[in-house]
Length: 246
Picture 1 (spheres, rainbow, N blue to C red):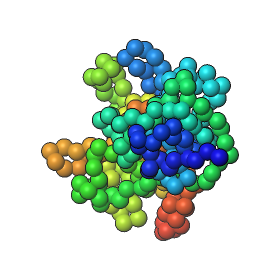
Picture 2: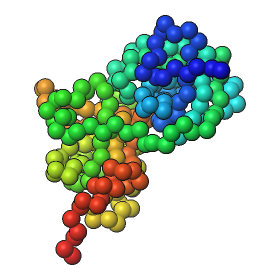
Picture 3: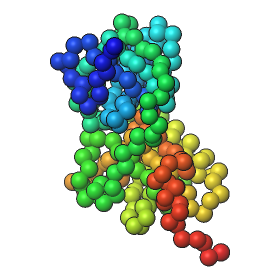
């Protein structure tokens, strides 16, 4: 019988590790040699997370598509030290899957949203490290206009929207969404009819300026905005909103 290693215990000293994980986020990136690879965030049944990569052709070799929300048994992979500038998890390691990696889809082990929500005041006071991405939830307020700007990295015109989240204590979190996600957010916002719109931001980055908190912003391909998800935190928030007098 195979023994699975929990992600929190994973390290380079373990010989032939095997993990049981769910994909909670997946996006495609292009390498310097123009190869496509899938970047993912895995979570195990204890809620520990780790980033992973898999080249597109290797996913085809396994004859399996690793979709968000699905669970997999994975073995024959490399465990590398994480070296990115922005970290989506606090795990010091990174899973790299190769053509020898065996991926088998399995039945779900747990049912959870696996969010790890940061406190607004911790972020504002500098207690949340900007190296790590965060999850937030709250009510949308102060939605700005869809603004064009020149993206110096890609040399093209992109769009952005400034907005804020507030929590039940009326603490405000300033946010900026850029690129294609700004356009998607613009259409989502304009399609809502509720007087109070609640949302979740997942895998967002903290920006600081001159040592102080500036705002949180999305990372292209990685961050998400979910309007009114059916999770306990949003249901509880909705129940505590005072009824409108009108």
